[in-house]
Amino acid sequence: MFALKNLLLAVATVLDWTITIYIWIVIIRAFISWVQPNPYNPIVQFLHAVTEPLLAPIRYYLLRNMPVGIDLSPMVLILLLVLIQRFSIPTLMELALRLR
Figure 1: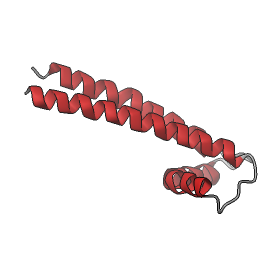
Figure 2: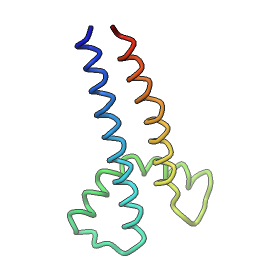
Figure 3: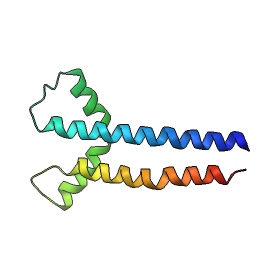
Figure 4: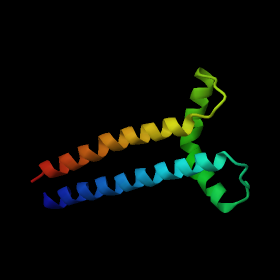
C-alpha cells in the first residue's frame, strides 16, 4: 500500500505543478495579447497552440451568452484551473495519506 500512497502523492504534486505552470502560460498569453505580437514568433506560436484549445470554447460560450468588448476567457480559464487545483490536489493528498 505504501507504493500506491507514494504514487498518489507524486501524481498530486505533478498535477499541482502542471496546473500552476499552465496558469502562468495563460497569464503570459493574456499579457502578450495586449500588444501586437509577431504571429511568426515561435514563442507566440507556442503560447497560442498550448492555450487555444481551452480558451476557444470558453470564448465561444462567453461571446454567445454575454457579448462584451473585452476577452474574459483567460480570466475564466484561470478561475476554473484554480478551482480544479484547490479541489483535486488536497483530495488526492488526503486519499494518499489515508492509505496505510
